[in-house]
Image: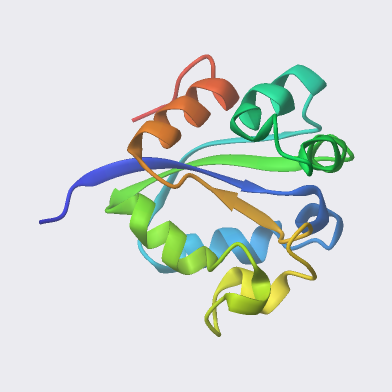
Length: 140
């Protein structure tokens, strides 16, 4: 059974630097999702720390925070049928070497640390991330 969902997607600094945002947006539109919100910004430290708080005790956390705050990102809210699962399939595995051909990460990622894009992995995560990045809410 399908349901309409809203998910959070972010083109990371490496994707923005390589001018991939429009290509990535086109891919989400191509699978029938509708953009409800977009913010182009360099994440402040506090936002980055809140977003990645789940990884705070991991050894890669400091580098992750440095990377995500190193330049502009494109933060987006996408809505559609089974948007979370559809987005995750389009994005591909976190490790680009494991990503299926034709996914965003298989096509564009350079390393596990610079994998171009982030997408919410579940409904609770999506709600949390959307609240962080779009504190004034979304159109619907």
